[in-house]
Amino acid sequence: MLLKWGSIIVKGSGKLGGHVFSGGPSGASVHTLAKARNPQSIYQMEIRSRFTLLTQSWKDLTESQRESWYDAESAFSRVNRFGDVILLSGKNLFESLNNQRLIRGFSVLNIAPMPTELSVNQTQVATFSISGESLTIFGNYTVGSRYQVIGTPAVSQGVRNASNKIRIFTDNNSQGGGTSIFSGPANYTEYVNRFSVPRLGEKIFIGTYAINASGQRTTNSIVQAIINP
Image 1 (cartoon, helix red, strand yellow):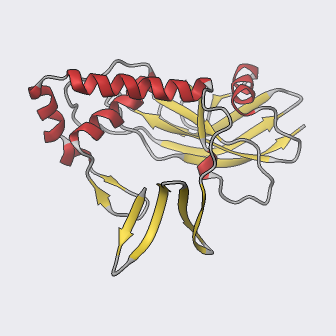
Image 2 (tube, rainbow, N blue to C red):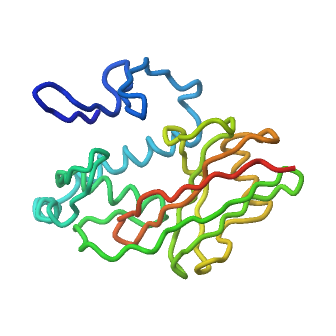
Image 3 (tube, rainbow, N blue to C red):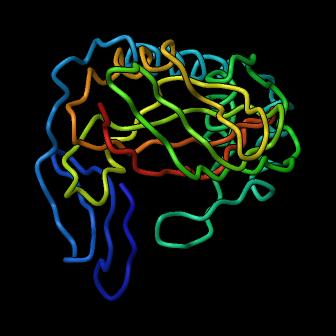
């Protein structure tokens, strides 16, 4: 749950108890939190497995190793959804960077790394063909860098924002600016396995983010793709 305090609370974003707070062009809103229909899906189980591993890994660190994460807090400042600069605690920084490393297939870092430069991540266009069983993404990317592919289930063309539906479903290495980094029947199958087959005329939000060896990640770069025959 993320709150911004004024003379009273002036903004809210996230979950609190059984409710979800959000904001948009029409103002702030709150709705009842809906429980997932399948809390034991393979994707949710992977998330829980990573969380359990990182919780135990933090407990197993030596005092000097933990101190390295406390010392690194200011080096990894972030900007939240309200545009405010925030610092993660040493424990949260350990879990955040190592979670991304695990997603990428790396092992857990016990000593805090130094921040490193992030790759270019600009998704430009995506195409989706049902009959051709093809999903392709084009963009401006850094050669050899690792990009996590993210997307949403299909929604109607009138939907303007589906950020709350974005999920990871595969990852790839980029081949360089302007070229496809994600295409073909195998990747189409990855999407279908995650979200099911979309209907003709619907659209999806799809894109990427980059992860470096330190566990830092870029912001999401998302475009829309209409479902074609």
